Length: 343
Image (cartoon, rainbow, N blue to C red; front, side):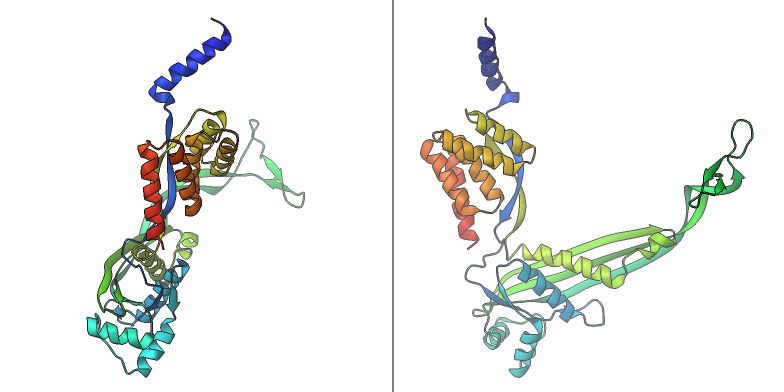
């Protein structure tokens, strides 16, 4: 058998084996739609939160933090917390948490928004514990390093002077250690400003611990207010998944197809070189437009980047070339649903 025939036979055998499958599994991060039904809502107001935890009334600060997180999603126009408060005061509206449907409609009418966000800070606990710990570290001694003949070893100092080299030893020493921990919990609700009904309600909890040993590390520990802001930011971002698009991780299959550029693109994507992979698949659809795998892989790449209209066209091109592929049918239906959910 000649060399060319041997290579062809090996390639054919490879495709039969599981290790040389016609597909390759990759992980992608893409946008997922809001978990709650927020169609038709574009302008919202965030009201000061009830504070049942701190005793110093940080409800306004909680509302401003949540409003900033919502603004950063790019999905909504958000009325400033101070402006909402001014309009409610002018309308003589004062409410207790949680407002009922009638109060929600009154607030919505006064503010002129589609929906309102409100809630309560249910818990914030902060603990600080100090203790002595024993650690092993290298410390200087008063002894000098000597060579085999007993002569003190010296080094050149920064000014060219001769500096005797001191000896270091490993010792167990006692040091102060400080540990800070905190737990924060908020309840957040979004209500339709016209109907008064609650669209979604979630309780989000966050916790964390920070520890430093020795004066320098203890000085770097975040303080109570910083920790509060950090946990609040995490909790707000968790809630926002309910009302806005958010990153999710998924496993997807790429198709190697029958052409070199398509196969090479798959290997590049498996090594997280998605831009280079996309270039290869673009080359493939130009030179081998009959290859549905290249179009399908392009759909995955565009979906990963959030270019959903391009992803939809790529999936449809793949389906047009192989109308019986369940994978292509499913991809077209899924991207169309995602685009509708993100409207």
